[in-house]
Structure formats: structure tokens, C-alpha cells
Length: 241
Image (tube, rainbow, N blue to C red; front, side, top):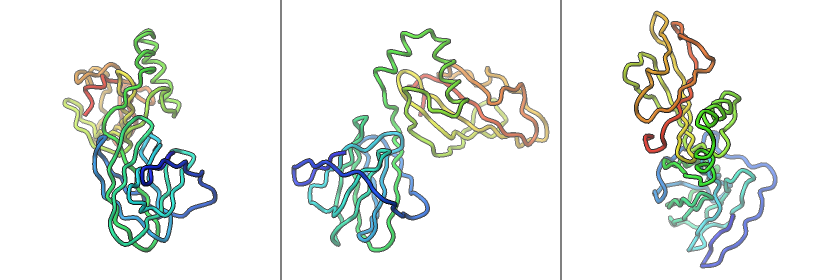
């Protein structure tokens, strides 16, 4: 990560040692160019990260940060300085940028996670999708998700649980992960049957809205009353909202 301070870029040092933050991270959601408000401690380190997109640079035009370091996973720790509010610009590896209006305060450090809402198109992933047989693309993605891994070439851009209503499906659906890469987007859902009877599981019930493929985890033809399982939906990236 680099830090822009009074028109000069400085290389941030790696984070060493243990750092304590507030117990829960505040989630912020927005597209590239969005503005967020953060209240940061002047006395203890604060943690800022962008989900699935490492922070590579901080623009601090007024020199308001008294300390900043980069963690091994692409997040940054910062220490606010002074008494007056100030503004930072965060830049990420994918080319996104976010404006952060900071209010300094005393007390424990804070933790913020920014969730980008725009799919990040990766040229290499798009080439792979276009050159690889269609069935092989779907199989590789499904196998990665079923194995608890992120599909190669795709970035997790949102992990906030989001209730979803799907026409014709009487189950309670919650999207728990959204991955983006090339021409495709990958969604992982939890399915809950709150009814008093089993519900048949059919891929065709998910048809439309750019859906290419559906996989149930574990594979099953129905979901029993009170049951819970997962589904992986692959769809055209432009159909995802």
C-alpha cells in the first residue's frame, strides 16, 4: 500500500504485533466513488478494509493521520490526529476509490468494512470463461463453492446476509455471498423451509433473471419441513442488482 501525504507517496510498513479493536465491525455498502463517514480513535488503532479488494493507497492531503500500516490481508490500520474532521481517499487493487469523511475521537479503536456493490470485471477470468467449455466452467465453479472455497478468478464483493423473494419458490431465501469476476456472477443462498411440509427442489424454479445454473448443497430433490440447506446460483453478471 502507498500513502499520499502532501503530494508525496510513502510505502506503508507491514503490521507487526497484536492490535485490539472494537468487537464488531461496522459494514458500509456503496459503489466506487461513494462517500462514507467514519469515527476514528486518536488513541488506539482503527481497522479499515474493503471486502475482497485490498486497499493499495490512502490519500491524506492534510496529513491528518498520525500513523498508518497495512495488514497482510489488504486492510489498513490508521490513527486519527487532531480535533477537526478531515477527509481521506481510499484506493483499491481493482481500481475502485472511496471518499471517507473522518471525525476524530478518543477511546477504543473502531473497525469498518466497506462492501463494494459493483462487480469487478477481470479480463483473465472473462477469457477463461469464453475459451473453456461451458459445462466445465459451471462444474469448476460449483466444485469450488461446494468445497468451501472462493472460485478462482472471482472476488467476494458482498457477504452481508440479504433476504430475497424469488417468485414461485415458497422457501425463505437469504443471499449470503456474491462473487463477481468476468461475464458471470455467483450467488450463494441459504434456503429455509418454514412450512409444515416438504418442498420440492427444482432448478427450473430459479429460471429467468439471467440464471445459468443452480446447484443444491447437499444434492436433494426436496427440503423437509423445518429444514435448511444451501443453493449456488450462477447468472449473467449484468442481471445482478
